[in-house]
Image (cartoon, rainbow, N blue to C red; front, side):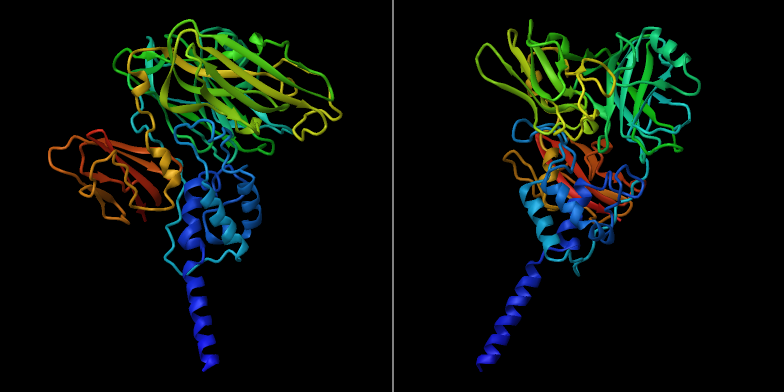
Length: 514
């Protein structure tokens, strides 16, 4: 009798353990598909794929190492300091689930598996007003990272305002990041003419003091879209310069990156993207780091008028280790912009705020950056360390904080850029997530789910609404208004998030397309 009780207890224990066991199909695949596979796919930039169970199992040890250290996903800003639109940050419980899965043998599980996402090169702006493509470029033999700038004529004969800009890498295996500039000087043409073949070598800037940054792309990013009524002024006659970073090891491969642009039908409020805080306004300059030393540099600037800030983006090179940027308005409060504790030159980029930030006149902007020019810095380009000063070469240094800003208008701080979609990374793979601002939402249904060719939205009659569909990495792939039937046949298989806005209410539904 005693043996029978022990056997029953053991069976119940094992059954409950099996029921609660973390598996790839039940828990892990959704996390990986939501956070990782935009780069870790067979055609992606990452060194290995994670789209299948076997992929993840074979790389499980390195996976947990980079996730626990928060090296991956590559989101540099400290999420406890400030938040940005579409930020890709793993929650603690998601890290714990992956840890449990690896430590328990990384089982596949018997549950129904999610469809494996398919990553083809898709374009969000279906009917761009301009599509600008670099010449077909075959990378030469290189033994270091390559920064190549391509000059493209602007097809708009008059001044236009850009409401959307999208970068489409031609070869995602080798395009690490992209910067898009406009320039009205002749210097970029002269630079281009001095090199044979497409484009010219560039690092840091593009060799023109009049260049203006108008767009960026890093893996995982989608289109750049500005808040309502705002955009980038594209000067008549300006040339477009696309600067692309190709990593070491890309030699022999070809690329044909392009950008799609959507113009506004009316004049927009111009967003300036300028390094307001920079190495020329240091309070303890000049920017010079002696060999075998460390140093922190400080910059500040007093804002003369009320402005609205929509984005921020630090820039430095290989000796930099950390960044912090904030503002102190006349009220004495602190406006936190961005903090990066572990700077990585290879993953820098611009960051859009979830809501525009009002910066009152008289606010003092502060930034500080720490540099390590010792042998303890594994990124130090010199061995042994050498004196390093200001310059655009990879072995020089810089300290820039780019702000996307414009003159303030009443209500700017109430514009919603990303009120809820950042919560997609906190879903825990729950298809029933709803964000309702206090209103009942049971009547909002998206079906069928899973689906293949279409979705239908059950919403009360005579309700004005809009529907945005995002892929698992946060890229907008569809935008419609007042359509209760949406054809999604052309989308790749995978996980999508349907964001429905109506009556100041936001609903997010997760769907699976097979």
